Image: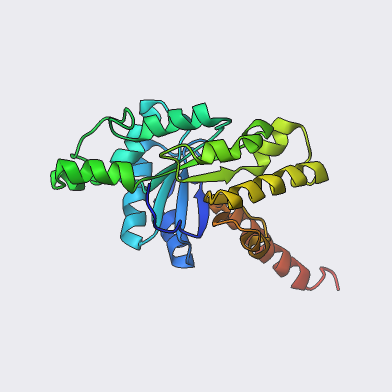
Length: 249
């Protein structure tokens, strides 16, 4: 587990276009999360995005769909800074995520220095193994009431670097609206427990980033490339139509 502070502000990348990563880097984001759980991004495009992000000085994370070797091996070999693993409900699931992403004896990740993570064969095996076990970050997503109640146990599993509260899936799985006061109280209690136990914590932000940072979150995902494109396009079109002279005057 690395002691370096987590990159602060990030964005989801859902479009299968490497240029999204470059644009987000130019916008000043600290990290991107290449979304292979909900995005339509294939392995080749993901690898290109990771290399581009590293070249642009922005940390490339990948959100995987599962912890099967086919899901975690490719992004790690391609040089991802870390993985986001969804639907981690308890310490046992967190431990399974650790084992999928760490080399033996900590886990079961397969080793090969021939990819970008091993500098295309230039990295000494010992350095490659150390980097994979100590510097690659593992972020587990708490997206259920069960996960909120066990958030300290999840965050204290050796090999877990951070916990990410996923508000959308949390609302769906709980059957509560995302603006329900009782759900907000449960999240606030989980935030306090993480602060007490010094667990690195992240979530998504929707115009409330300063307030979330004040509440103790260590890192935030501010939105997705798709959302930013839609919102910016809508603002441009709405502005042009509202300023245009009425037809027939």
